[in-house]
Length: 214
Length: 249
Image (cartoon, rainbow over all chains, first blue to last red; front, side, top):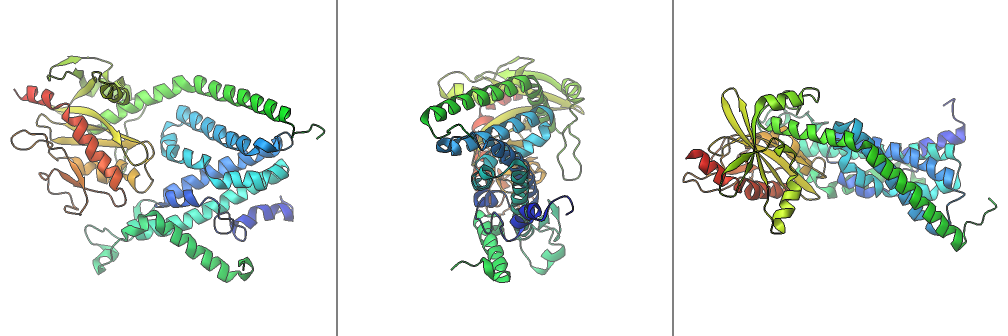
């Protein structure tokens, strides 16, 4: 990355793996459970969080010297909430179809602990450019996990990817289903998201043992 | 920074300033965008009503409404009458009936008032469709829809939508494979009693061939949303029974 210094590049790449918001910082678990039953929703949520966290981090970073520390959490919450509401209103007025798809996510974004977590841990103590990179990096790290979980849940639970059947037709018993394979309805339930996230954490820590705390 | 941001005075002033700034910003956005949003909602209602009677641009499996550029024209072309239904089954025309907010009407009925019951009569290829708006509760928030019926209250088309059901689970009530299952299902028993349609678990009819069981197959992982669909069909469509009885006589 010629554009970014080594230190800045790390802000983006670290959250993708060794400092991933979901598997290492354990932030944003609730939305990871709620919307990963299909890939499309995972992707939309990833993009929405990328947008909100990137901008939110910059706003908080610009305000960091004037925010009274006693009410900083409330200030952060108000910044996210108004950002999300304004975006939602603009979409409703000019891209109504898109806003219908996103409406479910609005509440989930406001309460997403990744956003508050990064404001609190990073944006309050760093300049706007760094905060922006940190926001983008963490949102990407979050999106990657969402997509992996969404991939397995949709494939094993519904036999589709992005809504397109890839294993044959479960009702007509074609493709893989002709061998007696069945969709696992349990994959669609939120607990399976936790179990998949758990498996990812397991794989990640067994590959990089320095991540294991004792 | 030289200002001490920890004093109570600063904190309170900051809070007040922030509330004023954010409040006016939100109020300004909301009021300046309101006409656009209202217009979008109006067109969406027309699109949904037309969708239920089969006027849409669907592909093989997707859902596509008639375009926003021609929805107003199509609506006046296909919807021949907009009615308000009285409790005794009589009706009166009201050209703005599609703008009636079912949510507000339900609240009125709950508080002991009279609920306005809109119904839209559509004509397509010599066939009449009676389209009824319904509204109920899903798992997280409101669900609603439009059901197109024939004179015998047999479903000819259905459209469902939701405010915040879980993507991949309850949100799938908005999928073609769920909505299309309702087509051909009956609401009335042979002697004319209202039975409704139940979204039933058990995979009794995965290919949806049985049309006289008053059931459609439920969605995996969406029990409460499915129950909500059954409930809104039972409670809201039942109110229109007198109108259909009059229609037959």
